[in-house]
Length: 182
Ligand code: 5GP
Image 1 (cartoon, rainbow, N blue to C red):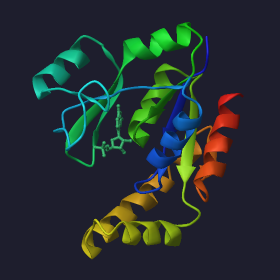
Image 2: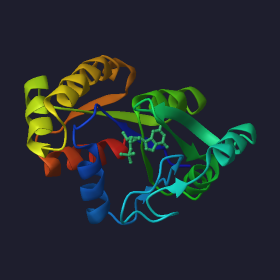
Image 3: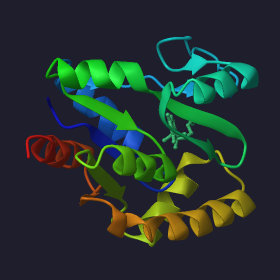
């Protein structure tokens, strides 16, 4: 059995970029495909980016214990990790990453204490602010709200096994990779 790797961190920290970089260099590592009730964005493919499901189907997955964890993210949609593919990967000795929100990461730790929880942190809150501004996709008001959320999210980092600072994507990905070997 391998150890499951769970990656989480505050909004806009760039964890998606780190995970994509890592998987590009290490195609043997599997990424769990989550189920979600949100609508697909342009270019997103069902079964590849997410399993896009109805609210009723999501309820059924919960009732049938098909989800390893699930949470409401950004107060709108539900997201959850299908349990079977995770169990199959670990039993086959394959490395698997979950890139999920902080609440979900904590649930995984409760049901799988052996999971390796890695928190991706920004170099500082000022830097996070800069990254949010740089994206240019949120209004000043939204940025202020997201920064407040990020501050709360930062306070959960002590619940994680490791904290990795995302200063340079390549360095951060390498650190995550090294931690996956522990
Ligand atoms: P997006 O809608 O932008 O694809 O994702 C929004 C957020 O949902 C991200 O922060 C991501 O980490 C989180 N997320 C994606 N899949 C899961 C999941 O299976 N479980 C939980 N708890 N969070 C998830």
